[in-house]
Length: 236
Image (tube, rainbow, N blue to C red; front, side, top):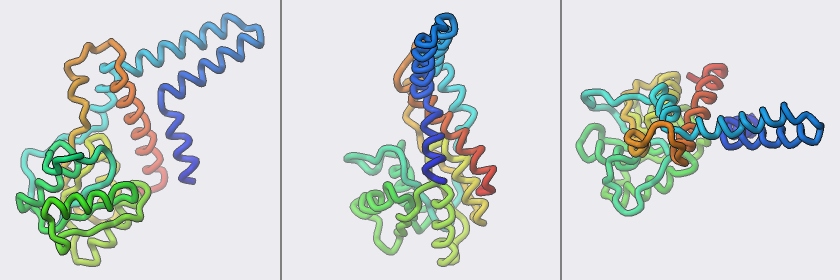
């Protein structure tokens, strides 16, 4: 099931969709249907152009992104989900997931840091340890391969310690799905979204194509699909 979902998710990338339209155009030429082939080719070019514009990318992002609250309450634990770029040299950079989680712990908003995700949990834990987080304040959940498992496995660890109130750190566009999954597992969530690193798009010309805008559009389309799928599965 997960492989099928991953394949469908890849098909949401505008570049893949444009390639499929280009292949269809080629096939239509071979089938001697030049007008339809030209239409398919034009659609491919138009969609890649539109999907690469900051206007569309930011519109899609705004429909997903969770805005930080005006204040951050104290909680039982800070949960940092794997994903995104890890700090290379400075783990205190507050714009990253790792930096945001570390800053919350250093400022005393929660006594415990829990990192989750098979892709980055171990690396996050090593970085936090090197940054001064003692082993007794750190929990590592490194088995989960998706957001549903992040929540399921992390909730089990938290409940085993009698904890139920967390500050959840993940990217802004992923927060709605992540928070929904944790709440479904009986965890009280305060979202603390990390920045997605797309500040340059805000000041870029809206209708000129950019590679980072295309990347953001693809991420957002994949996230909208994931939200629909998670609702259908009853995971949030």
